[in-house]
Length: 453
Ligand code: TYD
Ligand code: MG
Image (cartoon, rainbow, N blue to C red):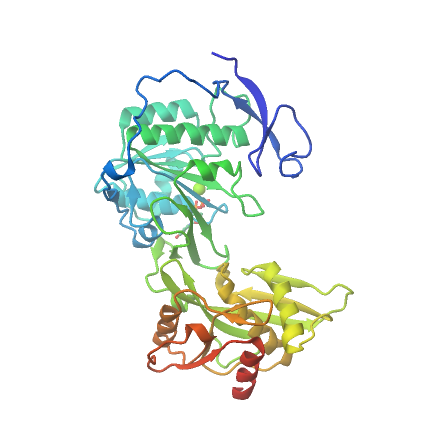
């Protein structure tokens, strides 16, 4: 067998180089190359391999639904696409202290009523985990616990115990003694995840990896981790608020962008089955700079308040800041406002925020951002009971958003009375209690709102 050799792998793009360099030659990122180990197995083998899978035609393969094991926590199952699939590897990331360990402990306790489970803790001692379980008043009789950080020991325990579901808390604390790199380094994280994934596929054990995110919001360790695992979930939400969101970023066994909503309590995380009104702030009266949008997260509509503050800039480069919304789209929307509605903001600071720590990535938020900015600039509240959605194009057109009907129905259910929406989303049948203002241009939308307020 060829000798294994050292490689340097970029944590941004996953590209490799034979020697260390300050700048990754593949993606141009600085200080991202980290030592890794090349297994040295030759890339090509031309001889037939014993035990290799045969080539089969797609038509002859029987398609069956994958058996799923629901965790019993409805919101968690929703993001997983219905439950944990046997042999799947799930990566769950989030800021420290956001509730990853708590959620997984709750899920394991619930799962342990049906199947054998194992919780591997590398961050906290077994006593600390037990203490937490007591505090949350979880009955933990059936949950097996292993306090271990050596990968080889964890693998041996998994192979011996054969649990149906195992949680590794966290992947950054694990280390393989075959690598010289420190625990938490790119090569360790990658190697440990790859070995555990192989084990999961061979044995059918479902493995949930807990991972920490760095300050800029990405999982520490290489992006390649996201390619290795089947499902990537992220905890979102403001650490200061008592709500926690879990979003599916990648899911081989379900829909992406599905959102699970939890409330933090002193007895752990509780699912919020109907979260639509969570992200609206409670104003007594309509205030300038606030606009409610109907967004669609996975399979469920959600109403979110978008806030904007436009204020005279005292610096030559006015600030544009967005929280929970895309910053690049903000600059684009301001340009559209100028060009197609004659609204000038080059001497103004513009701040926009999605209330409640929710992140909105869909372009259907454009119209709400635009109207919130207009409202703040003119210091005039938007009409009462207004809900909006729609994407704004560079030519000033308003483009339709997917699943318009569901958004409208959710808004009507929560008592909104007027919907300003793209023309193409206008419902064929009237929705009870909801006036529809269908517009196809930015200037028409602004004129419609001005008329009414
Ligand atoms: P923890 O699950 O340890 O966070 P992470 O594993 O993501 O770092 O949670 C942090 C603390 O918050 C812990 O002391 C328990 C507490 N907590 C509650 O009291 N109730 C809850 O619902 C959650 C999620 C956490
Ligand atoms: Mg933890």
